[in-house]
Amino acid sequence: MKYYEVEFLFHAPAGLLQDARDLMASGAADAGFESFEETENGMKGYVQQPLFDEEALKMFISMFPIAAVTIEYDVREAEYRNWNEQWEKEGFAPISIGTRCVIHDGRHLPPPRPDGTAPAEIVIEIDSHQAFGTGTHETTRMIITALLDMDMEGKSFLDCGCGTGILSIAALKCGAASATGYDIDEWSTDNARHNAVINSVADRFTSLLGDVSVLGGLHKTFDVVAANINRNILLADMPRICSKMSAKAKLILSGFYRSDAELLCNKANDLGLTLESTTNDSGWCCLIFTA
Image 1 (cartoon, rainbow, N blue to C red):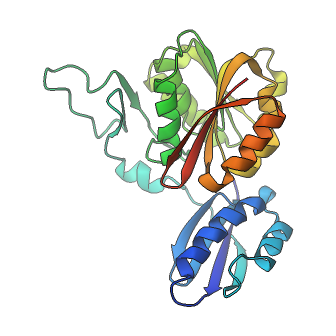
Image 2 (image 1 turned 180 degrees about the horizontal axis):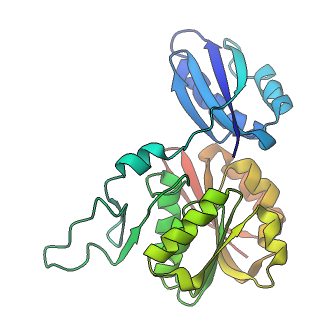
């Protein structure tokens, strides 16, 4: 995927810089941005080139909520790089999600319990190659927690924007009968298949390349659907996703800020879904709906 790197420079009174960053990160979602990093006097944002809506960005800046802050920005093509390069070189320490699940990279193994048994009921190995999803992010952890608390036995699972396949693998290890994941990034779909193999669930996992339109070729519905994607894509894709949900299916959404929850709840309500629960972690949000 090719990205633009947009550098924002804030002219802000002392004490307002961080507020300006937070507001920009939230508002720039309307222009397609999906990640940010802070700089000394502002921030950098990253957006997939086909999703960049510069008119929406200009509109937000013109109506910026803090009148005392002025904003300049510069758009350039981001250098193509392996976004997970540091993970691939160094790996990551084992990640525990509650007491039932632990995620590791195959090199940094979690220690067994004192009695010599497995470190957790569910152990997931993730070998991340240019794909997102190792369990370190709050949104991934919230969705996996939801799957752990859900009755997954015999269910069919749909993973929208599957990345490394971690959510599909978690669902299958929680008892799902099958899982289907799709992603617009070929690296991700290949990596998801690889991770399914090393977790011994490949016989129940299907990985598809493409956006939400690939669902049109599937002649089945799903009992549990998870989507860990940015707000704008969720709003655009929810009607197609909901068309593939079985009666009384669960929809788990994350990948957005707490401030975006109302928009997504309104969209879900229009589609006939009922809000079941809301979870927040460090400003990120996870919503669970029932069809």
